[in-house]
Amino acid sequence: MLSVRLASSGVAGVALYFLVTCNSVMDSRWLLILALAFGVFLCNVMPLSLPRDSKVRIDAGVVVAVVTLLPLETVVLVVSLGAAAAMALSSSADQPRIPLLDLGRRIIATFMVAMLYGQLGARLEIFDPSFELLLLGALCGVVYSVIDMLGYLVVEGNSDLALLTDAFSGILKLIGLQYLAQVSVGIVMAITYEGLGAIAIFIVLILLLLMQHSFSLHLGLRKAYLSTVSALARVSELRFDDRQGHADNVARLSVLVGRRLGFKGDDIERLSLAALLHDIGSLGLEPDCTNGGKEQREVVAARGAEMMSTVEMLSDVAPIIRLQGEKPELSLALEANDLVMAQIIGVASKYDDLSRQGLAPAMRLQMIKEGAGTSYPSRVVRALERVLKERRYR
Image 1: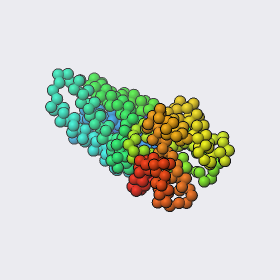
Image 2 (image 1 turned 120 degrees about the vertical axis):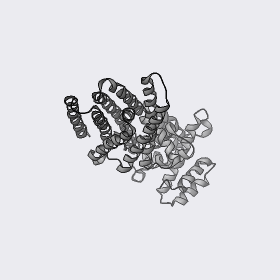
Image 3 (image 1 turned 30 degrees about the vertical axis):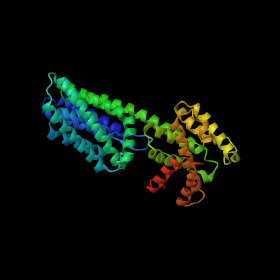
Image 4 (image 1 turned 45 degrees about the vertical axis):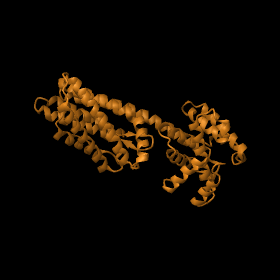
């Protein structure tokens, strides 16, 4: 990634020198096209790494400038050339999973936004042209961002409508501000072009790339945070060969059941973290204190909740972990969602425990259903059954 950034910076310097020295020779329209295509290239050649090991390319700001400054017949060509060149020069690790589909979604989004801009621009009559540009640019930026993110999720394989809406809200929360910031920069880029010409594109591009680098550092910190949580979850399994992967399995199944019960956004993230850490209280205990009955489970839950309550970024999962060892009637003062999440984790954990005994999936489900209404909440068991029937979990 560093070599790509250094190469891009070198090319940017050469292009800027070329732009300044040849401004009197070349037609200003071609200089504008060159500058904007180069902007699209730079934004795409440096993708942002998301916490779940996927990468996303955000070029909304430059696209807004392209749409507002160039005619419709040129817009798609400029964006296509810039994005295609970036994909051709990117390393295999930075390539999208399906390059042609990724390029296609970008072209479709650009075309739709350009059409929208052309239609609204022809009908909108505002005395102040700058205000008109701001309004249209902001609207086009929002539309492009929505189409781009939805297309990204589809390309990544989230084509199920129920999961798509939840995934979209999650990614909107994660990188929505970056889209908004880029759109703002794109509008500034278009406005400054009127006074400075094509060189304004390169000047504003420097600000845009610095902003993208800062946001990339933020995402890196979030990724490190999630990796630390996963490492903590695995520590409690190290003493038991037959428990390896238990936390990951419980977290994955808990999220699927939670979505079936209507949890979304922040609740799904809390559920996933609590499921990963539901056995963290076993650290420091003797093995015979972690595989016993109800009293031992209460001890593990209480210790785990106490540990997490001292960590600011994880304190909100402490109540869910504590509820693993408490009776529901003793927890009515707590959030109802926390109680349901604790019940989901309990059912998911039991299902994974049964799988480690070599039981067939149908037998595991049957044993859990026999406890529905007594040991396990009926609606959680029904949600588990639907998830298993849809074969979303193996």
